Image 1 (cartoon, helix red, strand yellow):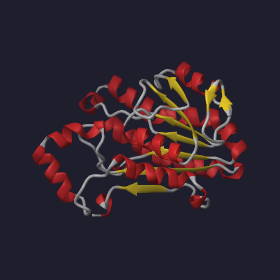
Image 2 (cartoon, helix red, strand yellow):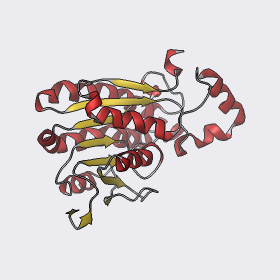
Image 3 (cartoon, one colour):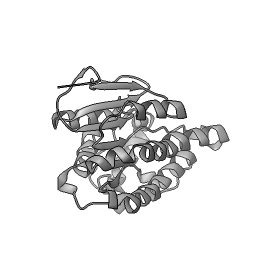
Image 4 (spheres, helix red, strand yellow):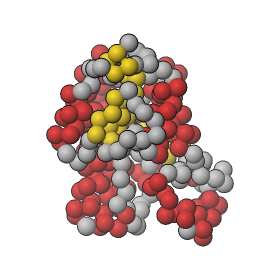
Length: 237
């Protein structure tokens, strides 16, 4: 089977923003293993070769329009693209950039694609964070945007349930990704954080990807509006 000239591996299609690295890349790998057609929208290609790669800067509304224009069928939307600009977020430009990528783009893509998702009775999975619930002294934009994702996900869930579309989010804790390289490189900070996690270790990206896939699957057919912590018990401690 082909789709827009691309060889396909299955009937169902997943769009993953930020699918080139970290949690997004592992999510693409998980859906590939399950036989999905993989569409990745990112600035760069990743280790997992998708069926369709769309180079896109999610801060650009025209780029988001381009993504939507290339989607013929959609069963799952994983809004995984995100940035953490650290102290730059205490400046207005940095704060706005973080909010745009982490939240506004999620809203824009989801609302533009809701008709496609309604046709397949699909699912939306957003990426919240432990910082949705804790204040971050270094990353106010990231924390604010991830707090907004929690409320946005719940609004999507109640607004679109009658169209057969479920919306949920995962809230990762400390995960071994590029975003946390600096924290892991600081041995003192790494050990302090690890000691605070009840499971005494950081998550692998594929452990978060597994929960994302669960939320998209029939096994979660009655899960709607949930925010699932994937943090080894960090927020429970």
